[in-house]
Length: 106
Image 1: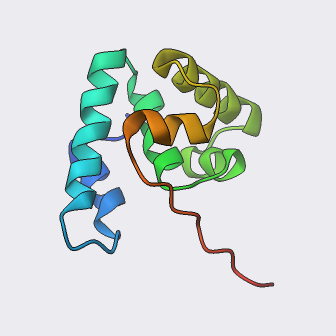
Image 2: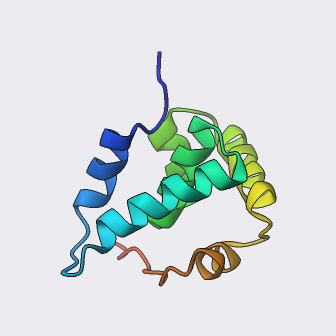
């Protein structure tokens, strides 16, 4: 049974970030603090992690192995619990610089 993002998995997700000041660990800690403060469930915490990585709704669905509608529902729940209405607001509220994912050419 899938249980969402554990602290170990969360660290693995942020490990690939190219930072020199420990931003990956700081972002992981911020996700954990926000999840506790706002009452996010494990799946919502996983969604938040994926959103902060720059994943689209369909990429969130693929990563979580759920339907697009389910992923969008999770995203709406995260937004509602955090009191935001868009990704820009999400990044602003968390005080994180938004990095666009590099698009691969086809």
